[in-house]
Length: 274
Ligand SMILES: O=C(O)c1cc(=O)[nH]c(=O)n1[C@@H]1O[C@H](COP(=O)(O)O)[C@@H](O)[C@H]1O
Image (tube, rainbow, N blue to C red; front, side, top):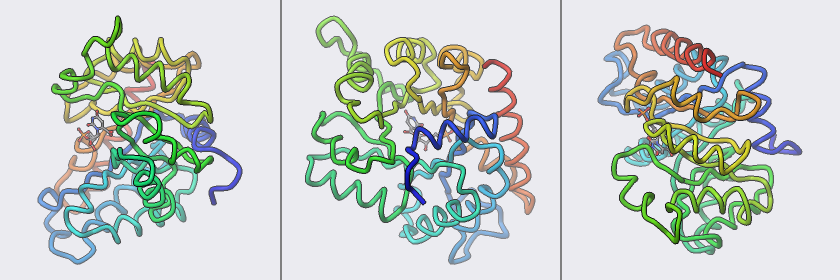
């Protein structure tokens, strides 16, 4: 399964074969499920499986957010969902959105959780604790590590915009991630679609590094500005995530088809500006 190719190889292949920079976010909230699914013991799995099967050919990645599963004691459904993606859509990389961050010995356990238990291709990590808190994930040489850099939320500026000796903190993170921290070539960065000027700055600092860009759709980020600011030299380089706008596009029994229609329109809108 995870043999010779790296996360970044698999991502590159998915970008090309699917002609898509759209990452479909899997943030399942049972309160928003269509009536015919609510209450079932495997409702979270069934909901996500339907979305995955309806959108796999349109997606360069899937990004399950672990909190939505853990909050409802549904980690087994997350395992089953990722196993389903591996089996049915093996060419679509899975990013486990867990935003971990801890001392090295604990990070080793988080890496086992993400890469062995859940078999994710990549995991999101908070870089606040520094280089040795990231290093354990890199021991899994065929997986990716996606560091928070300039997050999409308004409060992201509280710390990420602080001046740290002539540059802003997110710029330091970007420079470290593109330089000395990336000795294995496994790193990527998160930059919110709600801040196109900072996407452009991070692109400038990181060459063609892959960027995970959440914030279009429900958070109101602008697709055109995001793509123009973030595209790599090859007109690629982005995993532009949308979760709620796709997941909850429809409320009826045809919810997966409604999700597909939004995913298709979003993929095409992104491609217009590459
Ligand atoms: O790491 C992330 O994925 C992430 C980083 C960030 O800065 N902002 C952000 O919204 N996210 C995640 O991206 C998803 C956005 O969901 P929607 O706003 O519904 O499209 C959620 O799963 C968030 O946890």
